[in-house]
Image (cartoon, rainbow, N blue to C red; front, side, top):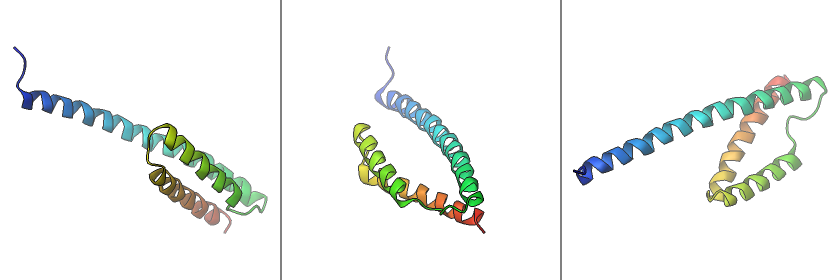
Length: 99
C-alpha cells in the first residue's frame, strides 16, 4: 500500500532539505577556499605595492559570471549582485593588508 499524499510530500520535502543542506555546506567550503586564494593575492599585492582593486579583472569576472549564470539557468542579476558582494569583501581585505 502506498503512503498517503501528505506523507509522500513530507518525504520529498525532507529530501529537498537534505540536498539544500549539502549544497549550503559546499557553498561555505567553496567560499572559504576562494577567500584563501584571494587573501594570498592580497598579500602578494601588498608586498609589491599593487592596488587592492583591479577594475578590469572585476568587470571580466562579472561578465563571466553572468554568462555562467545564464548557462546554469540562474538569474544573472542575482549572480552579478552576489559576485559584486564577494568582490567588495575581497577588496576590503586587500585594503586591510596594505595598512
